[in-house]
Length: 290
Image 1 (cartoon, rainbow, N blue to C red):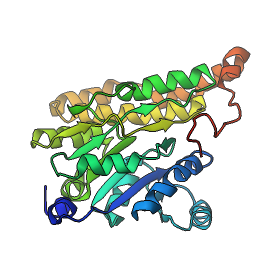
Image 2: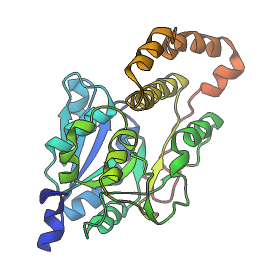
Image 3: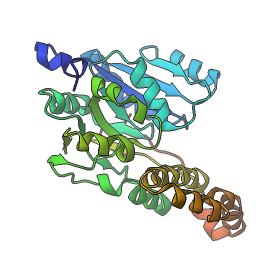
């Protein structure tokens, strides 16, 4: 880990923190997320950066409604890992805390992240992604599929598995591996490299975020496609060139090509379409709601 990654801990000064939120979906999720961060970020002087994949009007609206926020408008960047990389490079903090825009942070989320990283022993720390007491069965399905590796209760101690919806790193360490931050989700690209280099990861049960729904099937299937493509890309790196070419030539019609047909089927069957309907989103599902 370079000197920048340990600056706060080695000098005895409290490390500065930058929170990065990649935003593609927008309201109401981003609003819940930012409201959960505001008080704790202001209390310690942390900067909060939203890197937006949406249009300029959306970025301007965020900057107006949340004047304490830094908003970065991406130039044609759409993938979440690349949006986060832009935030890392623009950040001023010693530490980088990542939260997914669909999540709301517990009031002590930042404090837990700072405490876990303060002695420089770990290169990444993270905690559980807790449900938000969903009203719909499909949202529970999405939650279990997406976050099964981060369900509470989270174990405490060294680990090889952290979810990047709720995670923090020394910024200097991320900058050392900036070439890995664009391609695929960091638990599949960055984390194995860190572990191979002797960097330790820490599971911190008290570092809690709550994941919100509801989600439509179109959005969920799109996310599954992107995640699966990233996973396949990482696995393909370890395959012989001839095998990679063979898979590319014989795989036939891609998953994404079948999504419109699948969605047409769902919409043509009222019971399935009814399950996809999104009820009103309640911001008061937890005692610490925003």
